[in-house]
Length: 141
Image (tube, rainbow, N blue to C red; front, side):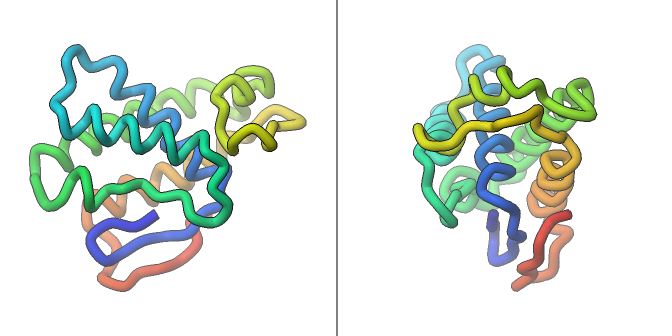
């Protein structure tokens, strides 16, 4: 996941589930602006296509440096974090598999622990806030 020259690494499934849930939050906004509808489409594709090792949040493309866009993305991210906390300690396997993340070949064999997803979310929110130094490139745990 990267944005404005900084980023962090997570396992594909973490990025896919995070982007899927972020896209679902966009669907709760009546008549989202065109840029956000485009972001939602990209996030859904990234979440469900099964790209191995190259899942992208497309943040530079959709947010740029627009403060209002970043603020809305932060709000949506906080909503996703709350959803994950409500499922803690794990998302039921059947529900997680209904997301369609990982493409057609991937499925979860057990309930999906929320801890790694919450870590991804915290890193994602920090990235949006510009809290990572330029060139930051570490694993989110």
